[in-house]
Each structure stands twice: as structure tokens, then as C-alpha cells.
Length: 64
Image 1 (cartoon, rainbow, N blue to C red):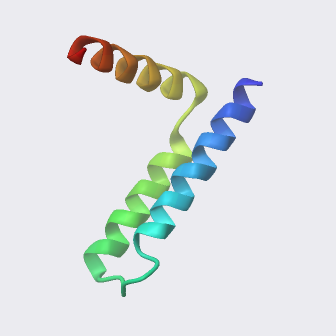
Image 2 (cartoon, rainbow, N blue to C red):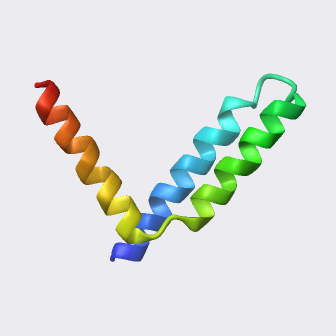
Image 3 (cartoon, rainbow, N blue to C red):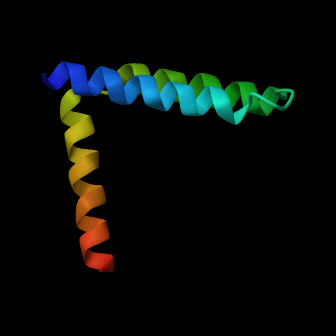
């Protein structure tokens, strides 16, 4: 179950990344940014995902 959530999140993140550049020509800087994001997405573990999700929830709760 945990790995399935992670794969789903990674898939959504990848789609968002691709959609960002869908209607414009990519410049060299855009390509560098995209490749860096893909590397990060591929490296994320389920524990990383859970920590980030928890931190985001705490930030939202603190903002009120």
C-alpha cells in the first residue's frame, strides 16, 4: 500500500512537470530544471514522502 501511494504521487508529479512545458518551447534552463526534478522524483522514498506530507500539514495548521 505504501509503495502504491508513492508511485501514484510520483506519477502525478511527473504529469504536472510535463504539463508545465506542454505549450511552450523548452529553453536550456527549462531542460536542466526538468532533469533535476526528474532525478529528485526518482530518488524520493516513501519515508521522504511521508515526512514532507507531515511537514506540509503542520505548516497549514500553524497558518490556521
